[in-house]
Length: 142
Image (cartoon, rainbow, N blue to C red; front, side, top):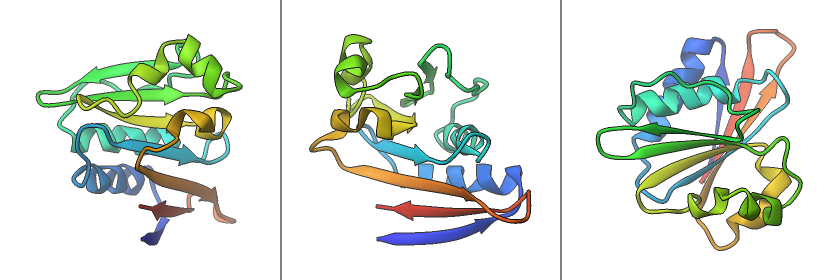
């Protein structure tokens, strides 16, 4: 299934994240694509809110992964920008979280470690910047 949304604000991007969170359960993997500044982390803020997570969601670019603990599930927000392979993700300990039944993983720059998702059901979110600086085209593939 493929849906396309036109998003015109950070608030609307967060709302989309909240909406998608409602359909997720433990073991879910959300793969986020988009250039720098497209809104991947803003989407993850909404995802966390939709999961009932109250901690602040920041980009994990330098830490590679941030864990956010909710009342019923945790969100592992992963940024694979600095990684170059699934083997590197495995060595960093990230793969033990991907697909784990007690968490939902949101992975920015997933293409860098695409072998880490073999055999898993994923939700792919592609965020494209539009001519209008505030507008994004978001494609959701389930």
